[in-house]
Image (cartoon, rainbow, N blue to C red; front, side, top):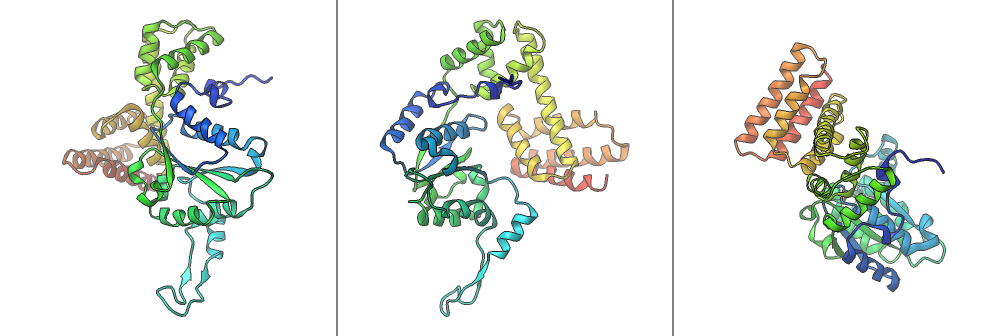
Length: 347
């Protein structure tokens, strides 16, 4: 068997029983498997908490041998390609109705739904499965298109059940929420966390003390994927995990993420930059001022011209001022990233 170098992948649970902690969540999901039926589901929880992993494992357990043919995962925050956009446009049609507000108008299904969702939910179930399962990650990214998605849930609900995944239930419209059974996913309990990390340390030949386990739990807020990533980084320094090398690697990984954020901006990819920036804020709990200050520190390390650095520093200073003035910080951060992406074209 080929050795898997990334521990987070190596130690992914293979079924619901292997999911760390979350006993009540697993009990509810297994009950749905036993009943061989469930309504649309809505998984809510912080980024990296394991929502998609648990959704996949549930779908696999529910569908059994028909899982591959009847399941699909789509990412609502990934932009469509130019070919997919053309395909969506070609499927628009002119209403034949002679009365009403839509009479003679061109009807266009939202592109993402037309290309990524409809082709899957329209196809009949293959094999002996009760229905298909569609997992939609970052569902809140659909924004105004959620109403169109709701109609699909109603039309094709018997043929396909949806598992919608989001970090912010406040961004999901009420008609969607009312049609779903909600699962709130929290960080795993500390005892289950310790048990899994100790097992990984034993398998990888690492030594770790209980107080360091508790520190690892606190700095990663109980998010298993983050903890395993950090543990693997720390293991590079030796097989004894200490507080010093734990914090050293934690700071190093933060700097790498901030550097990646600037590099993505320099490439002009605003969508990816905004997503990464929100992940950084969620993971490390930075406020706007802290994020701007750290970006300034990392910016000075880039081999840019004096002119470029001054322009970028002015953009950050202006965003910092606006955020301090009490304006929406998420908007100010997104606005800054958009300006850096735009400026990068002229650098």
